[in-house]
Length: 93
Length: 100
Image 1 (cartoon, each protein chain N blue to C red):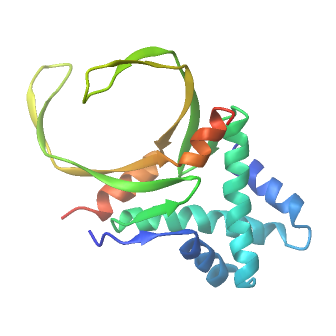
Image 2: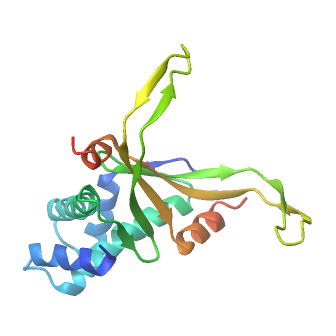
């Protein structure tokens, strides 16, 4: 399923809403999650999962082509942990 | 990092502010979005949200695990796990936003 298919499903279930409003609703939800993580916040959606930010320490990496050592700065990466209910559903429980 | 935790309530509040539906309907819409994503994944179908990321369902084979405390061997049954791969845009925004 891709974003446009998700929007279509929500639109089909809500015939009283304009398609463009459904688009805004779906986009707002994803945008809000990204904005929260960009601030360093967590987003916890019980039963679904939690989005959080993990810190990766600075390290000395290597250019795989030349083998040269390169400084890699500390950085923050997005992380998702599946919620218990969804994990159980994936396994048919 | 501010270290706050957002919940469904914050997402429905954002929908409420953005679109001007009732709070109740905004909350229901957030719920439907999560339900459709979950249903898709539960049926084994991946979910790809452009400029956000991709949720994939992966099959894991059975293996012998070990209780780290007792050292006892425990069988781990084959199972399905969910992986989330953030989009480049999300990675970029999270990296930029959390830079010191």
